[in-house]
Length: 462
Ligand code: PLP
Image (cartoon, rainbow, N blue to C red; front, side, top):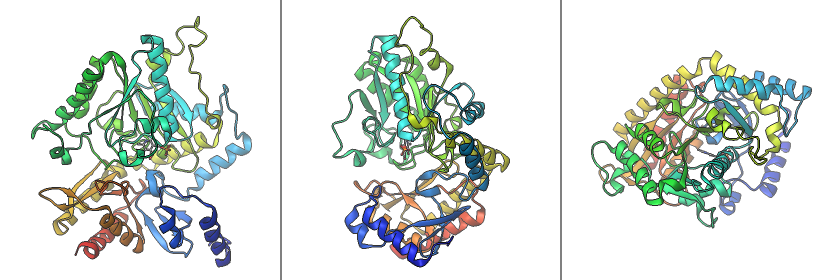
């Protein structure tokens, strides 16, 4: 394994156990086992410290490595760029920063400006700050509230958690920032849990629930609505028919800016460049991170329309009238250099078309499995962004307990297939298995993943 002896690797494991504070784990039980170190990756596959091969059905655990591992051309692009000019921050431009912005905007008709940052949370906070500044500039500070949706997630910082729709993530971190208001989710499969949800036209009804919140709060207090096009960590929630048209009508009616969080859906994951493009959405802000450079470098973008940008430059008599914000590492060139090459790969290898075809194949395989495994209550997805919700009873749709869901994930891992499940902590609603392989996945890869799941479901549930 690339020059590392078993002794070296055992030292790595000890160092990890002694000093790394891992994300999202309870450390005591975690430390009883051996931490898994991912040592190498190529294409869709990764190898751990024991040399065991896994097929990665979650693109680096968190929907990120869209073009797969071991891309030499990205490594070369980053290497060449950082040797030439690695960083310059503040007000200046860089060659890859300008060229990536141009290329990205070419994929986003109606949008014109790219603001660089480092993480999804940070990109979302940039948009929140822009909304707040617009509210001061245009509405005397009044239209400052930001609406967010139950089950949506926008990041781990305190402001983005204030817009966080997953209570299990927010517990114990309050108090949160004021001015963020929650609207109901739009999960058709669980509409029976929502009072008054109709059998027909659920999508329009779900969007109308947003209007109710707007009217309750006062439309003149609401600046923006921030939504994921397809909700990721909250349960892979695809929007119901009619939802987005109605949402957009509502935004227009009350002069509410629309911020689309594409941190997961962005850059090909759903089979179009952006998830919002699946639903005819015309956003004011689009934020993106994970797939922008497929994890080869840290980069995020907050992209706006020219109408938004204009609000920050049209009054030269006001010394405060510019976006008074900076992100130091927004000046790193590794990010846009990697992102440019990432985009070229998606284009040249026709990965959007592959994503659509392989996403359909995966959904079909999962529905086929549901014939044998009654615990699969629902299968949903867009492109290679797929979820299978596990229930104890199809009629009542009672969620499967997270422990059982965890056993399914662990069984797949045992078989060398890494799948995910949305926030398997509290409460038990986190019962959706997630599949988001790299956009290069083949039919054989997808079959290997669903065959492993078949075995795991048989072993766990009989
Ligand atoms: N938005 C969405 C939809 C996400 O799923 C995430 C992370 O999972 C974020 C924002 C936050 O991104 P980051 O972890 O890069 O800050």
